[in-house]
Length: 130
Image 1 (cartoon, rainbow, N blue to C red):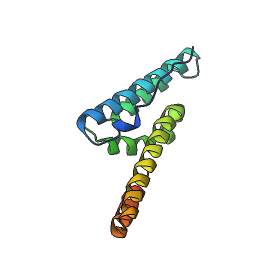
Image 2: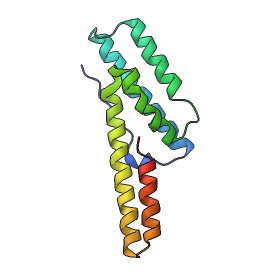
Image 3: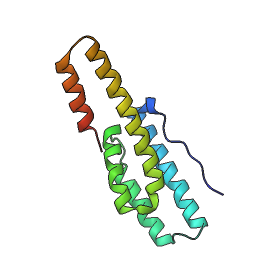
Image 4: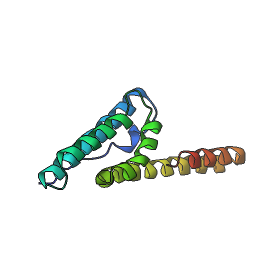
């Protein structure tokens, strides 16, 4: 049986303790589901599962902001390739949200011909790329 999970909805991608905690918990839950599936399919041994679980706990720290969590996810695919399907879903969701948010802001700034704000928004969007 394949475990199913839904990444956190895009509207929760704002910095704030509650939203970051929800994101962290959902990632941890998705990772746990993935580990259970791999163990059930005998695609991973217990030693590797412990390493991956500890890596997850070490890199998804309590009190981290949403941005810090998302940036740390970038290291997961190289350190824990088994988690790639899980991590990619969260990163894709964030990318779509960030793009939509930036484009709406830029459209509004272009409508009032505030080109300095357009430049600032575009720079902020570039800096948040993972």
